[in-house]
Image 1 (cartoon, rainbow, N blue to C red):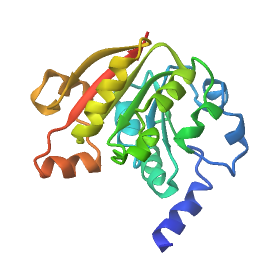
Image 2: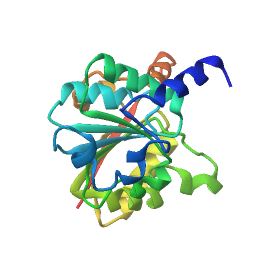
Image 3: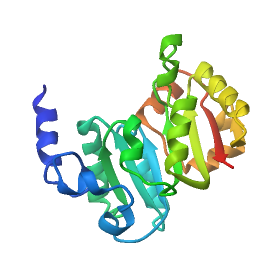
Image 4: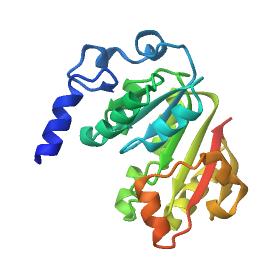
Length: 219
């Protein structure tokens, strides 16, 4: 392990906004985010597999009236988002080190109002379909923590994963596709992203890839 990672892991131990299993609050977050962590009782938005948490911090700056939680298993990446939040005094942010599969252990029913999934691993092999973050298995998981009418935003460069996600939405009676585009930056929907781009997105754009985006809600 590199010295940089070790240093970041060490600093995470003392950071109030990095929530991991060595901290007392970690096992008591479910149902208590707006009671025990966030200073203001506000709607909660998640960024799943957030990496450096570009959307967590970017949206938190645009929408101070909402609370944002970046979720990822890699502590060194969460350190980046945590640092930005501290430097910009974004008290409406948190960075949860956890596996997405365990989301219902950290959030209660109706506790989440919106989710962002940006550039996840497309998992192209058939045997990995259940591991795709827009598979029925994961959508059921999101539904278990979201309020009625909760919205999921999905952004990717991968056409296969995008078309797969559209099929999953179309097959479910409990979901409603709100909007979608195969070319975000040549559509009116680009305004909804407030100019926020992840590192992966910038790399794909440099290669000439079109960015796909959709959003759906739970009926």
